Amino acid sequence: MRGGIQDLREMQIIADSQTSKKYEGFPKTKEEWIQVFETWWDPELLNLVKKYSDKHFVTISKYLREHKDYTAMINVLNTIWCKAPDGITIHSDPGWNVLCDLCSESYLMEE
Image (cartoon, rainbow, N blue to C red):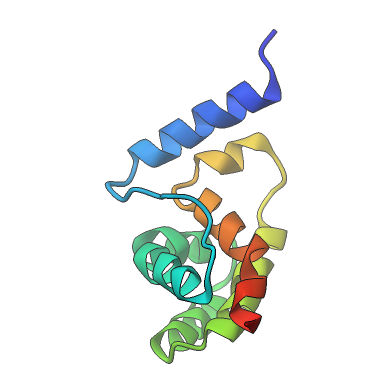
């Protein structure tokens, strides 16, 4: 019987193969948080916003990103994290691991 961690790793390999971007791991500074967000916004994070929210929320997200309101974008990312279905298959969505790390490391934006 296969374990959950192994399944999760396989899902992440599938998701990583769907993008040419390389993710180095969670950000450690405010500047790294912004860099990771900007690098992964289009198309991966934007596609997650589109997939797990409505058209109005997508419009707001684009506006916030355009105006570099990263503090408000944290709320967007957290909302997507909460709205997405709970399950292992979510980890096959390109950028999902990045979204999770940006949410968990959002305290960096308070520095």
